Length: 211
Ligand SMILES: [Zn+2]
Image 1 (cartoon, rainbow, N blue to C red):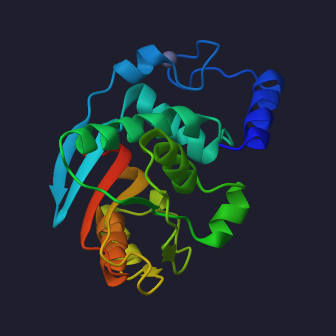
Image 2 (spheres, rainbow, N blue to C red):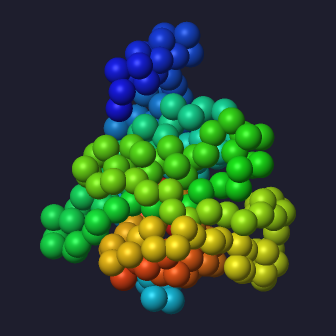
């Protein structure tokens, strides 16, 4: 983190004191008690091993909702740290990863929201693990808002929705980072784009998994 970004965050925290998105306690965007309340979940989606920091319910769901829709990018620090600790745990188990790749929003959606939550989470996880963050995979179109779609439509909507910079991930084992996985369709699509950029291995890490 640059000094300037740190200073801005400090100023923001004074102007808008953080309050836990889970239990409303003052002093943190997502407090230690709420963080400790969720257990990591692992799944295999097609060819991609997925790790979520917890289930998409309770305080974690509230925190993600506020990160995405409540204009509270400060939550990315706590939630990104959770994702980073899951990646660090896998690195400690000897799983090799060379870079983190955020599952980015379409630029039009990012402009609307003012920030890209997946990119913000990835930057925090990158700082926590020392892995570089490469924005090699891009969303081709904004599509319909995923939250308004049913499961079947959701899969149709995201098919072929990503493209990557040719060769940008050549030979790398990458960790995709996103906020929520539901059907996993978005992650599988992003994984295919990462492989098309030359990635030799793809894992995925999300804040929450929705069964
Ligand atoms: Zn809390």
